[in-house]
Amino acid sequence: MVAAARHYPQFDSQPASYYEASCVRRPEYSSLRGPVKVDVCIVGGGFSGLNTAIELAERGLSVALLEARTMGWGASGRNGGQLIRGVGHDVEQFEPVIGHDGVRQLKRMGLEAVEIVRQRIEKYSLACDLTWGYCDLANKPGQFEAFAEEIAELRGLGYRHAMELITPEQLPTVIASDRYAGGLVDMGSGHLHPLNLALGEAAVAAQLGAQLFEHSPVTRIDYGQRVKVHTLEGSVDAATLVLACNAYLNDLNPELGGKVLPAGSYIIATEPLSEARALGLLPRNLAMCDQRVTVDYFRLSADRRLLFGGACHYSGRDPRDIAAYMRPKMLKVFPQLQNARIEFQWAGMIGIGANRLPQIGRLASHPNVFYAQAYAGHGLNATHLAAKLLGEAIAGQVGGGFELFAKVPHMTFPGGKHLRSPLLAMGMLWHRLKELLPL
Ligand SMILES: Cc1cc2nc3c(=O)[nH]c(=O)nc-3n(C[C@H](O)[C@H](O)[C@H](O)COP(=O)(O)OP(=O)(O)OC[C@H]3O[C@@H](n4cnc5c(N)ncnc54)[C@H](O)[C@@H]3O)c2cc1C
Image 1 (cartoon, rainbow, N blue to C red):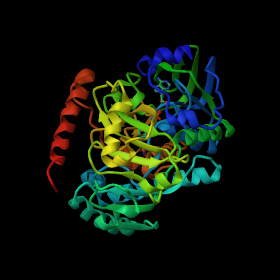
Image 2: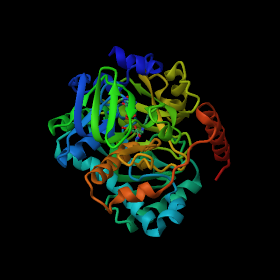
Image 3: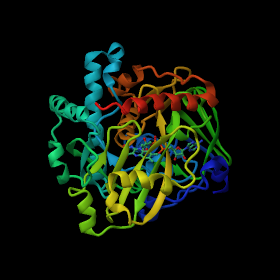
Image 4: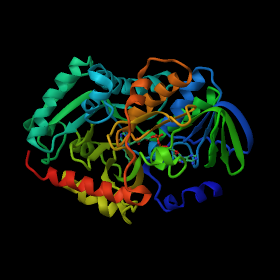
């Protein structure tokens, strides 16, 4: 524990999340002591790392996974729990690089990603409160009109789940708020308890033979034909390395670190609400997300709290009182929660890439080093897809989606380590100003 605390001191003062307080019993994994030799070493015990471990162990490879804190400690165990179709944003922008068919394949994989989560949960009977149903909320009439086109496109891609346009008049059937201009309900997306999913996946990886180590921050990597990955008290010698640290990568690999910017996002949880009050807010118990750059996202937990998340801070400084910062945002949507007590507040880091497509590939300088990162606020499904693609690529299966993702170049943010975040914050401000236009 002491070693991990030294590794991320800036996060030590964060309050515990609702998920920490409500998670299943947590098995403990020992820290790495001494040398270990395996086929693949994975750094990072979030969805990306844990599911890559499962994919590789299922294919018979030996795996050691090193996590600086505890399994699911990063974004995976503290996110909004919204499992939403799709990967990337505006993927048509990649047509010059991957062609029309490539864009279509990316879109299909965005739909497959949710199915991977569904199948993993079903195959291993993972208890994580999985509930189907999600609604995109339009902030402006123009966004609502675009939902009809989206439904048509999803049908064209073979999306088989029920979808429904919710007109402004029908909105009270899904949400008791007068803030929105319509919705798109998708019964193939949904919500779940993300920490319980991560802990369940850790247990599966361990059962399949992967060696999992907690409180084992990686301090140095020696690259070469084999990689040697060092922690304070041990080392892993591996043929292949997977870096799955996303927004928490820091300086571990500067080449990848320059391509992903950490941004803070914040969530509050109310006290448990009575059934009538909870379903009075969200009558169909759907997860919800609006369309703004700094989205509001919210849903009910299994014990009927409203979990309300949002914001996107690039400054590296979290609000001192997250509840005081987030509560007014919640009350703008649900003024009827004026007297509801806030019982939990917490923060997490989202990894943002310049073009908003998850970065899945291998280092040109070291072809035995693979990575997956930069999912923005949409990683629950995409991490599972990334893990599948990494598993296939590392096991030598060619011609799958891995090559497609790896083809897309990812810009290193300009401005060096210290100027990157302020520059991006200015860019985001510009997008937010544009949002003030009525359409
Ligand atoms: C507040 C919040 C809300 C979100 N809401 C949603 C949502 O509703 N839906 C959705 O789809 N996505 C959401 N996301 C995004 C999603 O959670 C992430 O994209 C996803 O969890 C990333 O998983 P990961 O495994 O790549 O990274 P992480 O889960 O962040 O795991 C990275 C791990 O690497 C470890 N690590 C870092 N450096 C080292 C080192 N040197 N040695 C060893 N270990 C190291 C860290 O301790 C960490 O546990 C949200 C994110 C946040 C922060």
